[in-house]
Length: 250
Image (cartoon, rainbow, N blue to C red; front, side, top):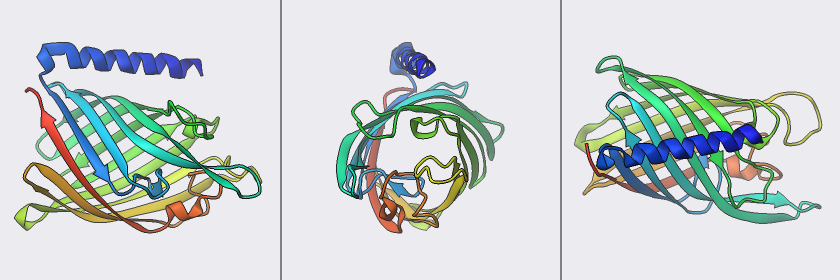
């Protein structure tokens, strides 16, 4: 898709320009090691480990640009329910704006390009737009793509979350989301599909590392769009992760 290539180029150039400005002021980098890469309730690594590096530029105006990556493993149906693992990489390029109205209320908007440079699966590059806001501990978001997972169909995601500080530097994290998408994974009817995902967990920072233990589940393992006979990848699961980040300048 031509507009995908143009957008990826624009995002990449903007990110490079941001990172090169002011001698890396406002630039941070980090990496996460997680027991499973779960995206909206569905495993993207066939229930395997993932390593996820990232780099972010944040300007005092609220503008930000980021690049994030992860290994992924999708399953391909080779016929007769014979499943073959498709190992690859996912890269997310993001440009956005996060504006703090006051100490408790902020609004945000961004455009994200999902890129799968080494994947042979039916999942292709696509673009998604996000609008959201935060009030205290509560966050509400809405995501939209008219080429969901690289298809010609529309996907929307409405989400709500809580991030509550607890004593002794612990935190409680909870979230719920509703993913809706056109029926393109099975092709046996014209009905839209939707499912809800849930998550609940605790987190804690210690010695510069961020630890988290999360429980994930969905109510729609038969329609979660991980594609082709992978319904169990949307089942309930616990995920443990450890992350470390560094800031290079202010």
